[in-house]
Length: 234
Image (tube, rainbow, N blue to C red):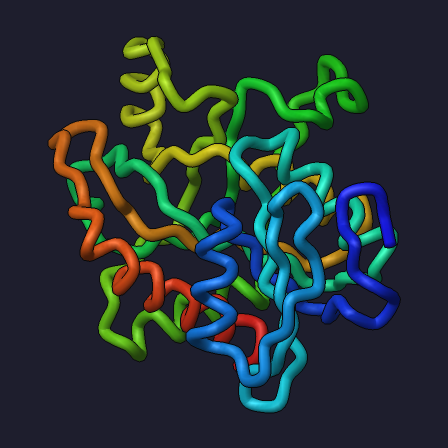
């Protein structure tokens, strides 16, 4: 057990999918894993371990924001030996070519600040996704006929942003979408020498102001789970 994860030794697989919402973790585990079992529920953050096509997989919530993800990712890596962490979640589109329901595979994740800022200080470290995972995810998405975009995303510190000037510059510089966790995930992967990737579904759009209806989100999320699993186990 660790401070925030109550799983026993051996309960966590080396490959972990991390949605922000713990209830999405439960849904994904019950939908895609064989024989999923609850391995963590400390503070309501649910984690399940089962198998996918014979491969052990854990699906564990991260909470919202980089500080929350940092807690769980650190403990999964250091205390449970996780070797591959894949964030699966929703994002806001920031380019006209990116449509609602499209999939974004994040090559890089920019940010104003992350929990790792205290280590890097004035240095703007730019960690990338794991190349093998990224390539596998794109191959999977294309094979499914998904509309997939590969490039940079923005990890925000806040959900209710009031920086239209910054959004304008990110759009100008090709940022595909905005979410709240990936930049710190990539930092931690680089620090601990593990593999990481972020696969996102566009649920709303900062330019067109479209939004995915709530009843459609689960179906779109499922496609993303499949892509993440196939990226880890091609």
